Amino acid sequence: MSFAGGCLCGGVRFTVQRRHLNAVHCYCQMCRKAHGTAFSTHAVIRPEQIEWVSDPAALVKFESSPQAFREFCPTCGAHVLVHGQTGDNTQAIPVGLFDGDPPVTVLSHIFVGERVGWYQITDTLPQHAGWPEGFGRPS
Image (cartoon, rainbow, N blue to C red):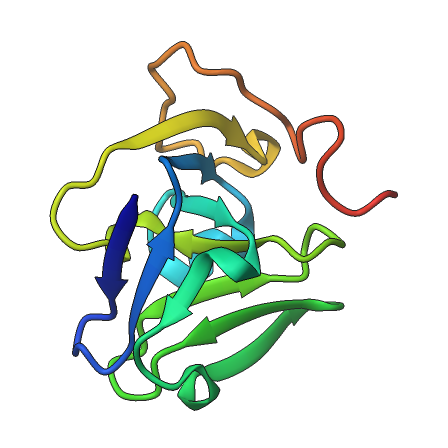
């Protein structure tokens, strides 16, 4: 299945080839600051699953923590890609960038240890204080 998406101004466009989109809600301070929200929702993909319609070299890259990068549209500033934080080659795309209302399955809440007090989690999805076991960079 193919899922198309892009940034606010339309200057960055991509297509993701996957059977379905799995995502996590992340409450870490960096995601909150990058998105200006209580949490961010990212679909995790492998690099070979994304096809760039526009030139990905045009994205502005910011090293948000050692060896972890966030990439933004240079025109509208939309947060487009996160990579390097897990220590492998997975990438994360904010699900709000996908066109329309694609079927997204949110699997869990991560970094709830950094959740702001003014937002309460009210569903029954698994919650992890940091990375779920088996994910993220080894400590």
